[in-house]
Length: 117
Image (cartoon, rainbow, N blue to C red; front, side, top):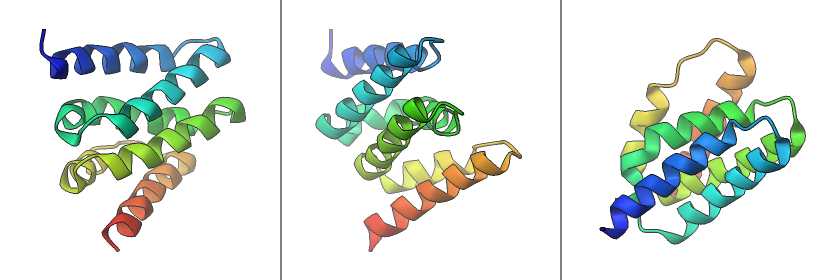
């Protein structure tokens, strides 16, 4: 099995666990995604960017601050680790009218602007 396909499966399983009703499990899944995005090369990560970015934005708006803070840290790492254009394209596909969701999307745009200098 190729390292990229292993990473893809691992990422999908982690994203699934972010929806777990137990806050400790969801928080640990966010932490694991943060580590994955800090350690693997962008070419292995960009394929799942839409799935992960949308899940982390959703989790960053969670009312449980325990989980949302960790999801926001993961968002920072995702925006810094992935290809800029891919992150930008993925952010443009985020749908939702809630103000807290829009706030997290703008936060991601800010991360991109900081990265680009």
